[in-house]
Image 1 (tube, rainbow, N blue to C red):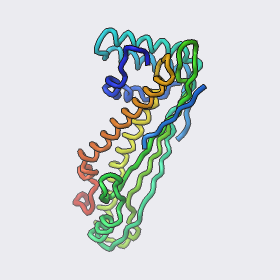
Image 2: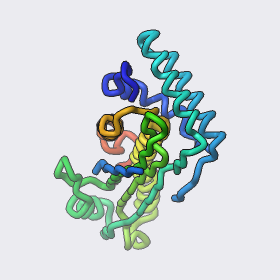
Image 3: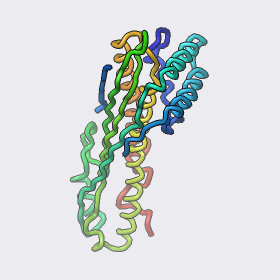
Image 4: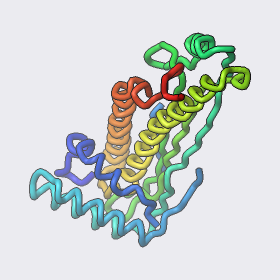
Length: 262
């Protein structure tokens, strides 16, 4: 990035600004990862999105010099916008179920506790799980005396797994109604994880797409990958806190047996 602007210290404080600009904007390669369609932006919309985003950054800058630096980066980006080709994040989602059986809610609960998906870091089983991985790659080209990002691709892979009560029809009507409510609430909880993952992909995509020019290609690569990983880490923390605040969906009604049905 242009000298005088410290993206490492300041960028994560501006992540939320990206979330307000999630609409699609109408050589050397580099890729990284953080362990659906391909919709292309239009050039004119991309310039408009950059302008709106950088105006907000200028408004939130800590000093006048920082704002000037960011504004200069914006004009460099616009200067070469017609040469750049960016794609919206590619999102691949896989939904799956695991079978449980039982004549009573208690029997079903026991099976879920025994064979439910294992959380990768907590090493304990939960009713459902959403796992996601982010990767990104980009092309860098020289324009005059500076290097710029000319294209980028961000890919998000999501896997969602929830239980399926295979012999539910043999259970009492009340238990079936309880299960229907529970399953709906569990899916809603997992969708919250999906939303966080999508926002992470959009934030990284927007960051790379709006990156300005740099005189050093090595410095540019280092900055892009380091800051993209910082964004990813921030959203991973959001993901963890989401489970803590909802008690893994319990406060959202993702509990079985329950007393929500009559």
